[in-house]
Image 1 (cartoon, rainbow over the protein chains, first blue to last red):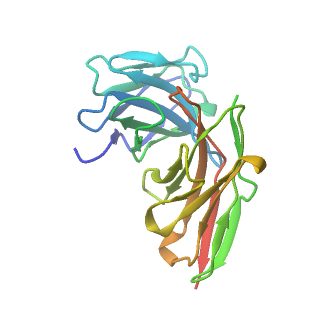
Image 2: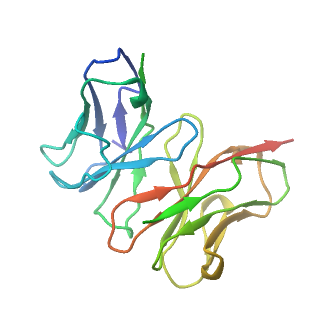
Amino acid sequence: GAGVSQTPSNKVTEKGKYVELRCDPISGHTALYWYRQSLGQGPEFLIYFQGTGAADDSGLPNDRFFAVRPEGSVSTLKIQRTERGDSAVYLCASSLWGGMNTEAFFGQGTRLTVV
Amino acid sequence: AQSVTQPDIHITVSEGASLELRCNYSYGATPYLFWYVQSPGQGLQLLLKYFSGDTLVQGIKGFEAEFKRSQSSFNLRKPSVHWSDAAEYFCAVGALGGNKLVFGAGTILRVKS
């Protein structure tokens, strides 16, 4: 596609449920990032993939959060036992390769609401 | 660790007036600095970036920013604001050799006609 696509655009789930958020990066981009944007805040880094491997997962808040990118393209962010504090917009970005010198293109995000 | 402060949560300017959005960063080495814009329903869009060289950088949509090392600042400017510039603006910093951006909390720009 022309840009980074994230699905669903909105997700409402009950506290304690499991959710998966999907990111389709720009074709050919080897680097993929997940960020979380809480209300009134800037995006916060969660995890960075280079190819299929998670090169930096230092931003994942706890072990309820996990992300995969099995074929080096589509990525899924998985959240177990959701809590109300997980409510936020989850942003995905991709770039041709990693590092600061290549532009990261962001998707429109998935708004997750935990009720 | 890096951090970014955007002191103004909201700014309102008249259409046609000049604009300056403030950004201060904290980082021990030469930073990579970015400005992004986020319009409702849109993804973050890169306006401009600074890596090295000329401290005044030009971006898209008529925006520019100036890196001032002595003040740890990277303020965004535009000489004449258009109503379509109403959006939220984020300053971000990255580290040499790093892969993640640290964002400020954002500044919401309102444009009045």
